[in-house]
Image 1 (cartoon, one colour):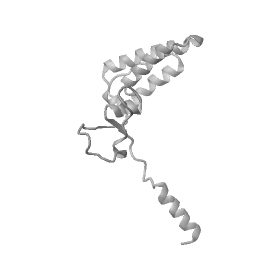
Image 2: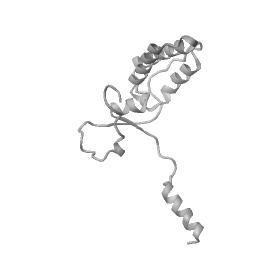
Image 3: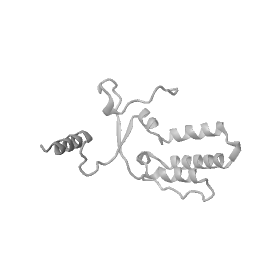
Image 4: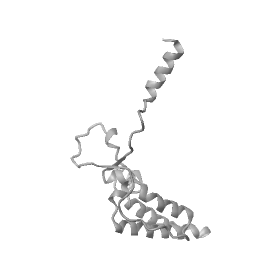
Length: 142
């Protein structure tokens, strides 16, 4: 549990949907609209991968140029901390993790600000229970 309480449940998991009056923002997962500069070739692989994942994440549609600049700075700090080897800084890790949360890069951070990302449904998915019953009936020959 963080300073702001536990991560809220997704709207589909709540029993009482009328309890809190705050409006939920739903966003479609997809690429953002701001320009993303290329990552620094000197960055650690993990920092580069994290930075490159951001424009393809659903929350990127809410990003402004200042958020992209923040992401570059976080990736730089992350890279320096990872490259430090034995001198890994816990304080810098906490600062990087906090900045990543502010960029809404985790499910919990997005839920706290009432944003849920929804994937486009795959072509006609059959629920597992229905499939199991159909398999059972086929095995019985009914």
